[in-house]
Amino acid sequence: MQIKFSPQRRDDLLTVTKAGDVFTINGVPFDFSTLPDGATIPAGEVPCEWLVGSVERTAGELHLTLILPHGPGPSQAVAFPPPLIDPPDGVIALPADPQPLSLTLLKRSLPMWTVDLSKVVTAEQKAAEARAMLQAQYSAAIQAHLDAKARERQYDGIQTAITYRGDPNPQFSAEGEALFAWRSAVWTYSTAELVKVLAGERPQPSVEEFMAELPAFVWPASSRRPLN
Image (cartoon, one colour):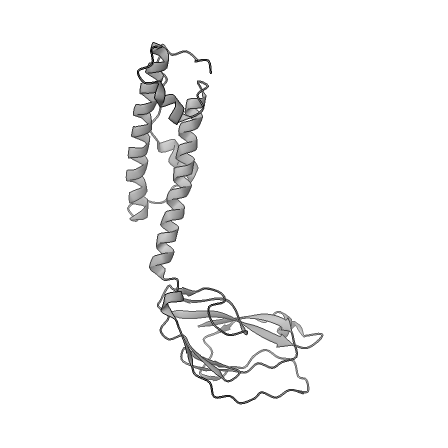
């Protein structure tokens, strides 16, 4: 378990007790025991003003951040507190400077808060989002690569260039046919290789490395540059 702190100038008090994955914060219990491994509760989904950011379980360990209230002129230990690692059950010793307390906490008996699994971002969802981002990143680079090649002959892009297949001008037609076949080869290769990356069957290459792997294109020897 790791508890980080976000120091904040405020006059109210904070007490935290721990019993396993149940935290009682200023008298209100919060039960994180059902949070799956690798999952995240997004910021703002836990109804507690003392929790900052998301709550995660990584490698079986709970990670969360608490606001740490302090008075004026806090010491270095309070202004820049290190995280607490695996604190024992019971009252958590929060970093604090000695000072007279003018406030008291009201004892409250409130229902325990528990994890709403419908609000949790699971490890599977994170992996799916990562796959979607990866595919979008490579797809954009591949499309730009195809369009750049077509623009070498003053076409607007690959989509425009392939419409010249069957054009009465034999040079334009040859270019359109060649680009059409090359586009197919590029997407066939890239799709198959990205499946391997996502399945962990090959290391993830950089975009630049992946572009260098794509099938090469050679302009038809008799081609000439069309006028727009």
